[in-house]
Image (cartoon, rainbow, N blue to C red):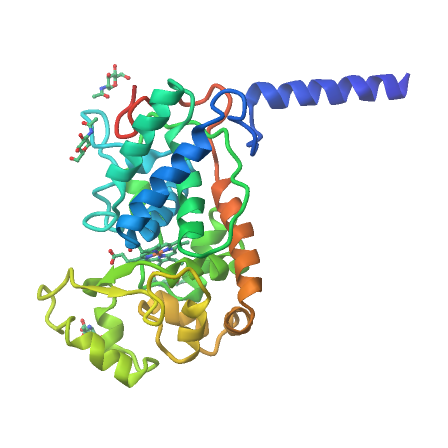
Length: 318
Ligand code: HEM
Ligand SMILES: *[C@@H]1O[C@H](CO)[C@@H](O)[C@H](O)[C@H]1NC(C)=O
Ligand SMILES: *[C@@H]1O[C@H](CO)[C@@H](O)[C@H](O)[C@H]1NC(C)=O
Ligand SMILES: *[C@@H]1O[C@H](CO)[C@@H](O)[C@H](O)[C@H]1NC(C)=O
Ligand SMILES: *[C@@H]1O[C@H](CO)[C@@H](O)[C@H](O)[C@H]1NC(C)=O
């Protein structure tokens, strides 16, 4: 009798789970849109072949999506009469990019399977395919996220960490999303690709002493001290191998060649120095931990089941 009851209980739990739809699954589209993953991969490959930096931009879009209201494609929504979107938030404005690539992929996915694949899932898969296209690790992307019907400028400003943060602040920002300090250090390795604007590393360049002298001198040439001059001038986040997804981000930190303040604080005599050293000497450890942390990041507060919607166009609510 007891075992009969417990079987019933398990059935109920499983049913409740499928109704609220809380589980993401790697095979979510294998029946409903079997070509989805191939279409996304081809779109990412073409974009990255045309401009390697696009891989970095797509990876960052997924991060900026997941940290604000969860991985729900809220970052892709344009401003409307009902809400001001996230694209004008401080960490995003004049900085996040890749919208055309996402729109193009979405149009192709819609042509193959109408209103089936969410924009949030496209961002998650595009992030993985970008990393792979630039030589980084692969992982199975869990799928089944749905798209939000709102976005939040305020949350984008409060929940995305700025480059002025120290280890404690970074750790707290990631903890607020259910990610550990170790995840934070591994995910920061995303800065092995992509670029940053002068305004985001100027204070480090002119005020900090834990910076390699030759590295700083070279950067100063295109990032002058006065605020307002050259604010948008770009420098690679990984000065050694700017478009390869490798562990050079960490070896750079060992020689004080982190570009952002929030990068170099990870190797500055503090608690996470050991993890940085471990990734600098063990590229495969970094690849493994980065992949696992990306899956965790992709699990932040997804909309599932009947929550939200599958947008037809990623920049607007249906
Ligand atoms: C740890 C806290 C983090 C801080 C403070 C931070 C901050 C920044 C800043 C300031 C930029 C340059 C933006 C600009 O100048 O336009 C940047 C770029 C970038 N970030 Fe982060 N970031 C963090 C974590 C992450 C994570 C977790 C990822 C992805 C997993 C990521 C991926 C990227 C990429 C790929 C770029 C280059 C984008 C491009 O070239 O278009 N970042 N980040
Ligand atoms: C969203 O904004 C972008 C950039 O302004 C624009 O190209 C796009 O057409 C807009 N999307 C919609 C649905 O209006
Ligand atoms: C604003 O919200 C109302 C009520 O939810 C909705 O009917 C309307 O279509 C929305 N407008 C826009 C521009 O999204
Ligand atoms: C980091 O957090 C501390 C408190 O833990 C706070 O005093 C400090 O202002 C924060 N730094 C930044 C840059 O926000
Ligand atoms: C450097 O620090 C000083 C004093 O803390 C501050 O006024 C200045 O804005 C900082 N940045 C630069 C680029 O000098």
